Image (tube, rainbow, N blue to C red; front, side, top):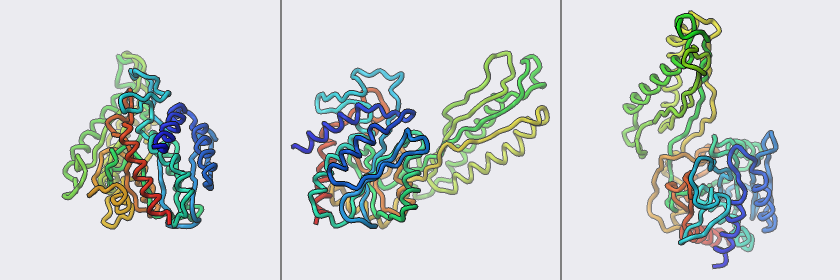
Length: 386
């Protein structure tokens, strides 16, 4: 199967670009742009404000609205501290598996889509086919948000999006949102022998975390009766609590990194309002009795909407016909799908590989999964190829 070998060769190229989110993805984006341009696509590279990151948006077929988007993110998570048995940035094929950072999450899908571009280009497409490859999904979906704004500014309205995150080629029609925050506490330093003369930012941060835990319990009672998710309620999680520099010094600074994954928009408002009241009415008055300059400031890292299951979903119908799958499910992890849905598109998540291998040492993509993805895309070419 020539197209499979072409896809593996392209995946080898993509894995070799170490596009960890904190680093540039431009070399990979330029490589994909060249490949798509050679296939005859109309290509736009959309850099961010720094120029170090970029999205890629390319189109085959007719211009206009109503197109189908094949989307994936170009960034990968770090490998530092992980015990790999292969070079994470050199594709290794062994026992029917393709090892390397990003193979399943999600350069495998990107490679399949781009390798198929000449096939799509050779057909008389009846509707636009778009390729959308983004930056910084792993750290807040910043690239997809920028792409959504760019499409809105252009007035372009595709109607279907297939997000190729690793779902073992299952059709996913829903997932929770992902809201991420850093809350910063400013207190007053002093000697630990006189704690009442300072404001211990770490201790107030700990009280804030305790309130998050209480809210996490309260959210369980707010779970929608027919919630399709597991667990069925909005979750709250504290990832980092840091501050202070010595046991005998009252900590002047602290930070709490936390997130919530809403199942319904009202839950996010419930949490944010409860925290605002707790800070304004309880924590800050106590802090400012000692240090008027004390502060609590919450930084929004990212607020990415979930993918809401829809009764009328063209994307689900199309991908069901392409894969032969019956039904669709939900997943607990987040993707960029909700951003595309917010633009009015019908959206599903469906891609090769298992999320169980994502972010881990010796991440891999089964060759059979890549073959199944290519079969889906070949059927899509038949469907929209005139």
